[in-house]
Image: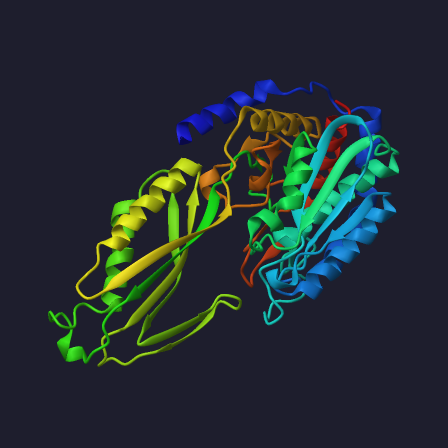
Length: 430
């Protein structure tokens, strides 16, 4: 798969549909981006300083309102789509123009971050004139700002009047609401009305874009053993206990399932003892046990990444077989939860990469290559990849995403916004 992907990326560049340097009108678009860049960075600081952890529905909607008002200033028609209360998710912001010219474009971002209200990392803080610490500034409020200010540059040149653009900012990308059929319904419907989707997740490097992403799903294993005095462990009457059985399962996953290209799986939380109580809404747990008591219960929750549905299905089957082969006096069950499908490298995605590369070359920004999907996480573009050609990773640059050290590179925002503005302009005029 990796060799095929590299060959497809290499062959993508000659497929570009643009063969021009910047026109006079495009130079005016660039001037608008430059004029608005300080404002864009101030806007980023404003939305970063509003906590919008996925479970903070009020904060997610507050950030959405700030963007909603900004899009309305560009004469986009906007709507907030609420999710059912029991889903515990804020909802999504959609904005659109209703023209009839050129390619129909879907621009994808998300309003939520991994930093909840109880996180100590809450504020935008400049380290110097190039770098700022910013919770969610890189992943991915900066990408949202690039979308907004690329469109603003086009608007200021009166270039959006007949365009067909949908902006979709989801409110639960970091932890998707369930069922997916409901939480991603509006995004998928928007894709079905579009020709191309551009995703603004964090950039993997100034000269890379994402043509393929691995899918993601969850898995849980629960083990039951026989509670007894530890002196009886391994005996015919007591057996191995829940923790030894869980250890066997995880070790077998590592030795027997691991190794296939692009396939990874990670146990993110592990509990074991006499009693365990896991709270999935807060990702917290309580455990009770003693060293002289054989563990009665063990629980693990993890994630699975894959490049195709076939790879996912094969991995799940191997995991099921391992879980079914229990140590004495133990039992185990495994369950799976779908989250993100895979975004496979298609010819259409490669053509979009070629188009972006042409724009970058015309701007004097250098060649843009496809990024290794084995190094990327899942994202909302994966949900629409079966319906439209996709390109992702067009957002801000930075480091430390999902950690208290997350930064955003302020110096690259202007250049990346220029790249997007020209790409969108050319697409809506095809």
